[in-house]
Length: 276
Image 1 (cartoon, rainbow, N blue to C red):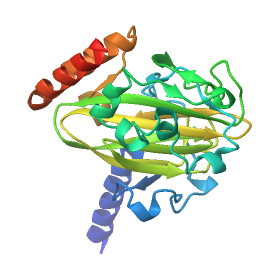
Image 2: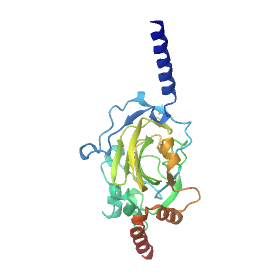
Image 3: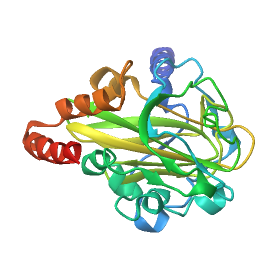
Image 4: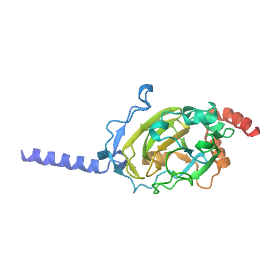
């Protein structure tokens, strides 16, 4: 009996040690099984309560550089009203959609298509590389109105092989994330702070270029969108844009990252766009 108790205690200690070394990225509620099906594209995760909030302010891998419109969509009527509306389709006259923008072909088209959102909603928005400070709870402002705005940002992940990855979004208020044409995350609930997450999300990355589109709609109060990936992903992938890049060098880096089977198509498409 004594031997059994000692053995059981040893197992319990090993288990406790193993749990203590579990990557911090899985501390919040893990969403699996994506991308989202068509009938739940605008549904919040379940559960989705305050008790899931996990402070990640000690994480040093928050993405800081993004590519996107050089200003926000303004006067959105509040995030609940704007969230179901594809503002990318609206701004491009239907040439782009939120889904297509999260693909390499759609991303390339931004070299030739500005967002025409009209004078009441921010006007014409060109595309640029910009920085968002992950510690700033109001960085969605971007020198414009602080309330009733939608912000779109894009990051490109160059993966050495197909892999399962975990992304962790922080947002205020309504966040939607697409990767490679599929929607992986939808949540109308703010996460509580600029570096606090409610959910980790398991996603699938393909070998080579993966285009991630992150949208956040804001009504009032704090306004932020942040994202980090798990350590294994950060060690394996290159995330673009990088420091010192403008829109031109960003696209040069994207072109260099495209898988060899697609390089010909990318080079032809990009050359056509640059000639216009």
